[in-house]
Length: 398
Ligand code: PLP
Image: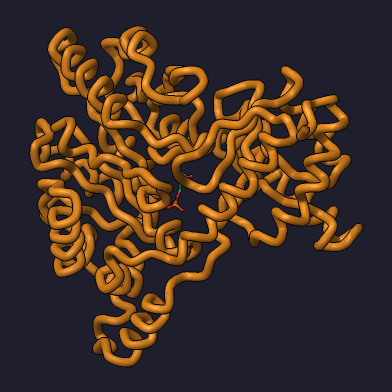
């Protein structure tokens, strides 16, 4: 017999993957150009030229005994130093290379952090809507995912809900800003609210409550900034990834960072190293550690996402759909015109529009539209969205 929980995880694909697979089959049937797939969060812009050039140079110039070799488990010392220096110069983050652990992307950062922090029975709290994999990451560590609703309408922190949701069993709170799936960016005020409540709860319960900041979309912001969490709350752990900023999700590179001001910081860092070891990560890909070191502060051309956001938000609201205007990431969160978002997504398929119901993100009645696609695909999809709006009798432009 195999581990039943793992078997179940392997068999039950995520809703997003199911829709993506449906899209693949449908494209074979009616042609790629006739299917409008807004299901996946795969960056649509190429990695920046500087990354390609850096890789070429590294392959040519790095001594063979280093190029494809293991690094230290926590990562190459020079890379960790460069990351810390970049964060301190850019955000005044107050971080130390000693507490940076290079990982295979945000998914690994989160799994490692949750495994490092929690004991079976502990609660890992999260604001809904949330990235569905959090449940998998928390549960594999033996923790229970505790869902706390965010504020209706703008998806900022809801003080009353946080007060209710943080219990004596809460070990950590995961936040994700810019957010998948809403595109919301937590404001300074929201973060202060979170920090204030967590500080009070720590005192009340007599143990630390860590804030895990999952930030693969940090650089994908439009006319705003994502505040740096270590400046607001000492017990912070940052889970970062280069997947989206440098458009290299398949290369698996990111880091976990424990704030030097966190309580038991060095114990947590040891536990992070232990979790990485127990989960079999060994070390993050060496070539990409060296590559991101040279590309800190660089991004792919993210302006396409902003253009897509403006185009899609403008058109869909014109057609009468109710959408949350995203300030970051590359997702548009749209209210389903009928209460059952799964049924709405089924109906959207009639128009060859592949949208993701937000039920699995812990938020019913909404859909997620990933606009990390070619702008031409959005333009081509707009008449279909218009027909879908008409199908529901939504308001039409004057
Ligand atoms: N966290 C969120 C909110 C995400 O949307 C994703 C990927 O889409 C991840 C984590 C995982 O990112 P990575 O590719 O760096 O593992």
